Image (cartoon, rainbow, N blue to C red; front, side, top):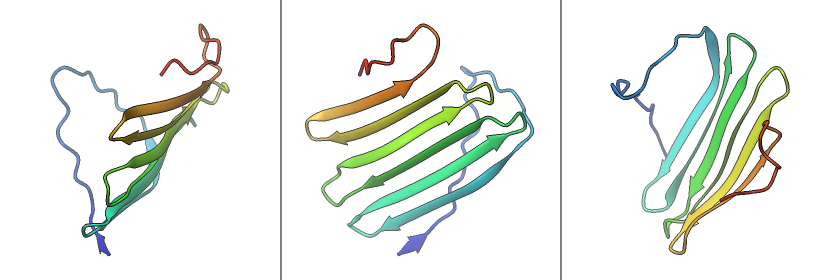
Length: 105
């Protein structure tokens, strides 16, 4: 098992960044030589909003994961996904305004 610390690329000029005080709760990345990888992280910003992502890939290249966020007002989105030779498949759960809670992906 090899542990590496990911480095962040500088932001693209196509995106505007906003600085918000917060904390990275944790980040973990494991690369298993010829056997895939797994990672996860969780961030709580200075306002109390939470964002997370967890994924794993097997030796065949199939990737499974979940990511999401929850705002302090209670708005949330959770995306459970799988990507394999047949494509990208996602199930989305949300209570965002303007959505009916169905999975559009």
